[in-house]
Length: 211
Image 1 (tube, rainbow, N blue to C red):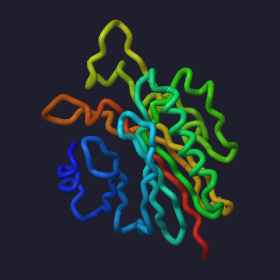
Image 2 (tube, rainbow, N blue to C red):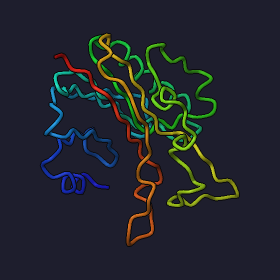
Image 3 (cartoon, one colour):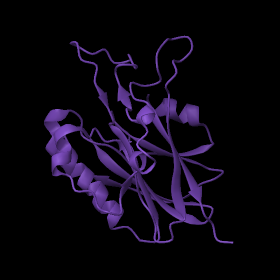
Image 4 (cartoon, rainbow, N blue to C red):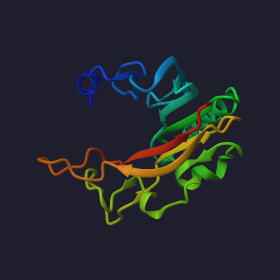
C-alpha cells in the first residue's frame, strides 16, 4: 500500500504517523477520539540494509501515559545478526523508559530459529502471546499452510510466529493484556486473496484509571 492510499483510507479519524516516506515505511495509527498524541521520534538502525527503523510514539489514553513502538526488523535468515541487533535496540528503549510509563513494542520481528540463541529478554519485558496462555490457534502469524498469498517454492509450507507484541508494564500496573487474537484471516470479497501474507495481531488490554 502506498502512503497516499493509507491517507485516503484513514481519512481524518486517525493520527497517521509514518517513518520518513520513501520506498519502504512503517506507520503507527492513533484514533483521535480516544488517544492523545504527545510526541514522536525515529530511532535509526544505522547498519540496516533494508531501510529499517524504530518508531517511538508517546501517547496518552484516559490519563495513562504510553510509549508505543513499531518496527519491521531485518528480513531473511542471512540477516540474523542485524535483526538481533535491531531487537536489542528496541529492548533497550523499552527498559530505559520512565518506569511510570507503559511501553508496548510490536511489529514484524522476523524472529525465529537461531535468532533466539543470542537474545536475552529482560525480565520485565513480556511476550503477550506467551503471557496470555500460548494459544495454539493464534500462534502462527505467517502461515503458508493456510495463507496462499505468497507462493512457496518446493514442498515445504512454513508456519512462523514472525509478528509479535511485547509489553513492559509501568510500576502502577494500570495496563494489562487480557486477550490476543488474529485478524485478516478471511479472504477479501471479489479478489479471493487475504489482506496480507501475514495475519494481523489484535490485542485487548484492561486499563485501570484513578478514581
